[in-house]
Image 1 (cartoon, rainbow, N blue to C red):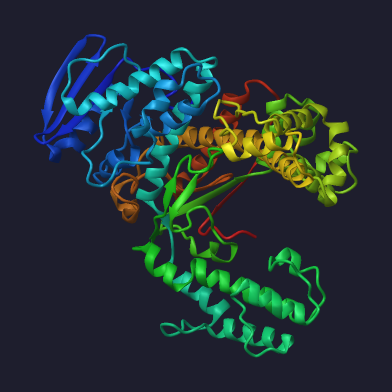
Image 2 (image 1 turned 180 degrees about the vertical axis):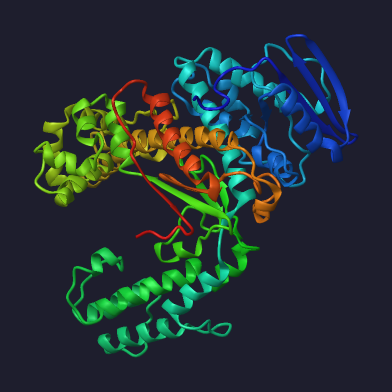
Length: 575
């Protein structure tokens, strides 16, 4: 199964909104027609058009249009998000003439303001457009620019697939928020009470946090030590001989002092309270659902970001609060070592693929004789992908170069390109940003005959930093593309499962998802599906098959697998 939207469709639909309502235009191989639609009738009209024509809806911004449709219980199968696609094509090294897109700066915004007119929808594969209301002009012009960019691109097939995957991801993000993640508020409160003590009065500190703070201050011999101010805490630590340069738990754990253990405990509890404490629970969980705000493509590599609620984290200690509705289950799945597997496939490194096949990749690296232990294999691989040059990672990377030369050459070449000021691209064509003018100026100044040692050192450091960025960009970005393909394929498979009877519904998931298995959570390499108990096995099978399909879609017949840890349970708690 391919990513929905990657193929063309014979039908397209244009919808524009003006002061008088909505104008729709429908064209297919038999001809076209236009109609006027009252705003109140839009959801039912879209549902009818979806059933009759299976179109690809192309609109300026997915949340602006789709959120309202989902609230009315209407889902669409595929779309083309113009804003997300604009960002990809504008910067892609595969686009030979991006000037028209770069000049259309109004499409660089993340989304229209709330007071702007509603955006426009129309189908993806059109050779021409009919005469439509003025409200459509800007959208039609942008779509024309994108079609021209694709037509002249060096790798149009890859870019079309990327745009389809990105747009499918936009649909998934809106649906995740609409359905929500099942969340047991009482269980969450119980976890917080067990770890922090009873909920304090407004402005107060939980009991266990106060106790941990008291133990730290006692060990420091400073009853007024400010534990939440890094500069003041470092000074207090220095006074007792803990000469740390930061308060990260990794650095603090290296010191043997009575203050360290209670300080790490204090930091852990303080983080829980600030990130997912009672205030978070009050704000973000309502009627048994956590509905965060996902931002597809919010990270430069193509990874998703979050603009509210901490969507891209699910703390281990709170996972037991994620609980399925009665009669439903959670299918929880995560991918083992996604980025190293992606690296193997991108590079065509059969040796690394063999080490990964059907087992833990790091154990496979040990079996190949590259390093002695699993921990060394992990340090070495992370060092190779993130450009570590010191410590255990830096020491072990040369062993990977000898054992897996093709994979290491790919990331080394990407790093070299970045250090020289070049740009790199993912498997499907998402492209890294160029270096800043300040970066270029620093490199140029270092080559000046009058450059100082400080100038040269700074230029080398900045070049290495950029090399580390481009080294990781190609791998992390391609892993994000694989995840989008996984989500898109899984979304389609779940939609094909039969709906359950009304008496078995999960109404808190909303009218679009109350009677069918649906995606409820996504985090880079993990998904959670909320499914009727009777469909648990079918949903789990869909998760596994979608992962295999995503691998074939991006890497063809290259022999790499993406094994999943799949669990069917009432809660998302991990062993």
